[in-house]
Image 1 (cartoon, one colour):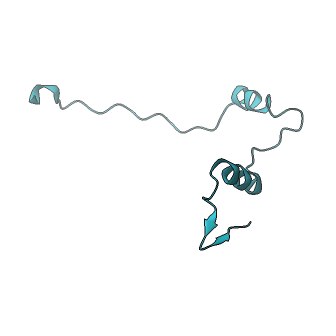
Image 2 (tube, one colour):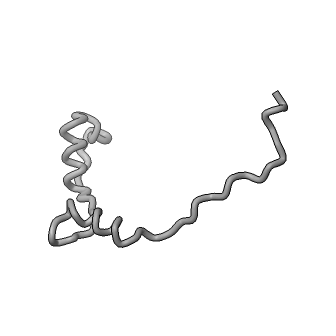
Length: 66
């Protein structure tokens, strides 16, 4: 069992670099001409959760509203 261990240096970690122009262009492609930043609409998310899990948004005999 101890044969699998060694004194070699661990692998180098990948550098954390910002995305290049090709990656930014690929990200912009599905966003369309507007190029809007990704966003999350919490009201829409709450509605999806409410519809998907009926009864899960009820707290102390009252409905949670946004």
